[in-house]
View 1 (cartoon, rainbow, N blue to C red):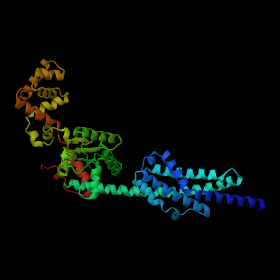
View 2 (cartoon, rainbow, N blue to C red; view 1 turned 60 degrees about the horizontal axis):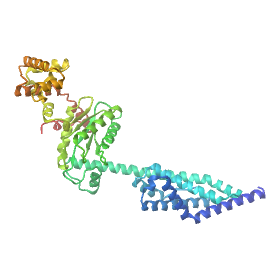
View 3 (cartoon, rainbow, N blue to C red; view 1 turned 180 degrees about the horizontal axis):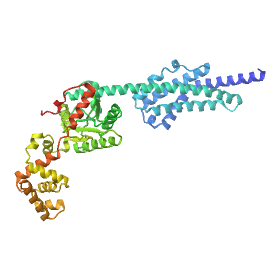
Length: 447
């Protein structure tokens, strides 16, 4: 090696030491510039408070000091050099900082450090060569540190997610037992889902099972559970848990939100999931108030699954009148009590478009006013009168008799509510899938 080359290398090494030593002396000032740049480029960091910014500055100082130590000693970075990263990553995850923002902060810190290296290198040949010799080890440090930080961040997120799932499951079991949460974590989970200590809080209980087969049933259930958790619309997440082979949710009726509106949102969830290939059968309870009523509401939601057809859908008790519910729950004996003449008329009328059935309903809805019923049906009163005579001739019942009209309406409701037993089959399949054979009848027998 020539004397000239040795002299140049010595000059570059000297410049490298000068640059790094200068940065070490200006460490606090450099860290301040880095934090200011992070706040300027990363809104999520700027939105945090003074304690967060002080913590970030402390981490930047530690990283810069570790980085300079590795470079001055001309060695490869090790995990021991950056062991402080793990706890900092967990604090960022706990603070709600997105992983993308966290890694972006590493990029900003590296950029500020590199710009400081270039500035201190100056315009001499030896200075520029010294800066270039630092580029590769700086990149290696940043890659190594950011990778370990990201792993620690994801590890904490997975732990937190598992804890959250455990807490929500425990909370659900407590509520299904009719008890109010008393333990600190359960109380916090309840409040996070809008289920505070107020015993008068109105809520619904929802249960859903898969309708038909799915390529990946477990994935389908978890996708549906996540979709249901987003229906609250009041700034909170709905408590929604995959409980063995069913999904159980307890949405709270917030201020200005009625049960009908919440049922519409649930209907929207079922329809959107169907587009994605996930078909649900969903049952919705009547409005309950407080933890003590949740077990009964849960039984209602499961029982009403009987009303959902094979292809899936929503059976929501807040949408059903007592009259409709009684008709839906009727057994074969109730149908056998209907006069065969009425059954025959209804069957034939349904096959022909249902005009006579519509006339009966319109006449009842118009409080037995023929002209009003005709207007609603958009027909002439004489046509309505003719249809009423046809009905009386075929069934022996006069629409102007309250008793006869009620009998006809009951027969129509029973005809519309022919049982499919779909709910019992789905519950049996779901229960057997996770537990083996068990008694499902208790959810459907009269209570």
